[in-house]
Each structure stands twice: as structure tokens, then as C-alpha cells.
Length: 208
Image (cartoon, rainbow, N blue to C red):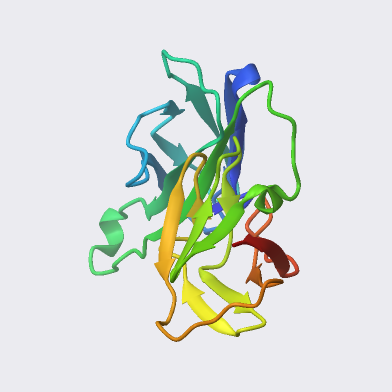
């Protein structure tokens, strides 16, 4: 099963989002779809339909992701979706084991009044206090990025705990005890686009 895109985009104003999944195998398969919450955001906001579908070889299946939240969604929200194709059993080939392939895609939910922004990582706020480096996302956007960050020009490499920073989220890191940062220090990050592709590094100003 091959999804037509690397991310599911949903605008709250539309009430739902959709993607097509193609069965590229030479035989019929069952398509299983399930939603997954992030550890930091356990609120269920969506219903996917159909959760199970029979897809003929070479055919497409439309998946709908319907907003089910009873409270207003005021910031971008990030979820995951598991898409799994399971070959239908052939009674004449009982000894043949079918291979299943599961894909896990991000699902990005955007409030209807939030403008599109190609570079939300520029809104992150980086600061240092003593030997503690802090990043805060007080924007309404989800920021996706590589876990590696570099403090320049000191060339201090640190690791983010995950490949995203959610709205309202704050992360802190301990710098080496002997680290001395120049007044013009920056934090070099490696952002990802909405579709998960790496973009050029960005040097974020560091408040001291």
C-alpha cells in the first residue's frame, strides 16, 4: 500500500482531510488504518474512515480523516497514522506467507484561522541562563526538525528529545560545565518542511 503523500494535512475549517492509498501489489489486499496520539498530546481529535478496506490490485482507496473534537482547535496539532496492507489469504497457497508493510505518517491539523507559514522554525525562541540552554515554542505552529543542534561558534552539539516541538512546548539542555558562549552565539538547527523534507540549516539567535 502506497500513500499519495508523506503527510496528511487537515484544515479544521474543512472539517476533514483525505488521502489516496494505492495497492501496488499484484493481488487484492486488506488496508488497515489506525490513528496514534503523541506521548505529549493524548487527546483524540480525529476519526478515520474506513478503518478497514478491501483494495483490489492496482486500485486506490480514499481515506477520510474527520475532525471529531468537541472543543475548538486553536493551535496546530500533530498526530500519526498507521497504514498497513495485509495480503488476502489464498486457500490454494496455504504454505505461502504474505508480507505485510506498515507505514507511519504524520497528520498535521491546522486551525482554520491560522495562515500557512513555510518557516515556522524561525518563531522558536532560544535562550541561555548559566549552563542551561532553553528552546520555547510559544507560536501556534508545530515545528519539525532534525534532533541535532549546534551552538555556534562554540561548536557544541546537542540532541533534541524528539523530531518536533509542539506549540507551547519547552525543552532545556545542560551545556558542558566549561562552556563559554560568545555574545553573538547562535543555535544552528536543521528544519524539515511540512512534508518532512530537510531544508537548509537555520541559525537562530540566542538570547543571553
